[in-house]
Length: 178
Picture 1: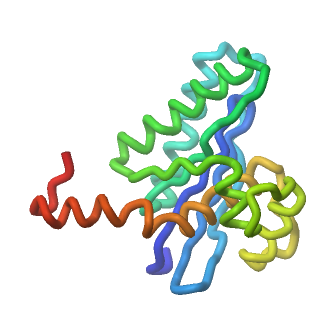
Picture 2 (picture 1 turned 135 degrees about the vertical axis):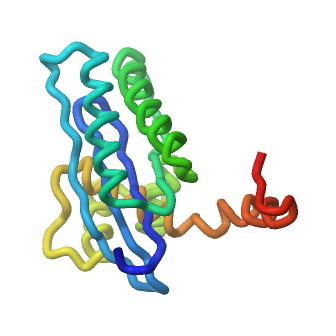
């Protein structure tokens, strides 16, 4: 697309999977596309997972990212909701594996730290910083898309330190990673 490093950020969910493609060229950050894959609660659970797989797969084909940053999930009490979201997240991870894409899995507080400078930032602070860092006219909507862009920004911030040992191992082993 533009010659920089491309990260596809993902905010996993069953009803909506947020996605956001961010390009970094030097210190310049630019949102190339963002949105949500939405599933109908009227569909059977397995059909919803299939729809996520197919729709997000199309996004991956179109975006051709260098890597993905998929928010790691944290749930307090609602285990039933968590189970469905974890399974939707598994679909996202399967897509990354099938495409051979490296994946970063930042926790919510790591995303907040990378975007806002503090792991305790609230949702509004994160959304405003995403808008500011990417030079957008408005806060990205819906929230899932803004969260996905934040995940992409965090992925770009952590990329070098996360994958440097992998790159060094690949070079030492003649380019092969077990």
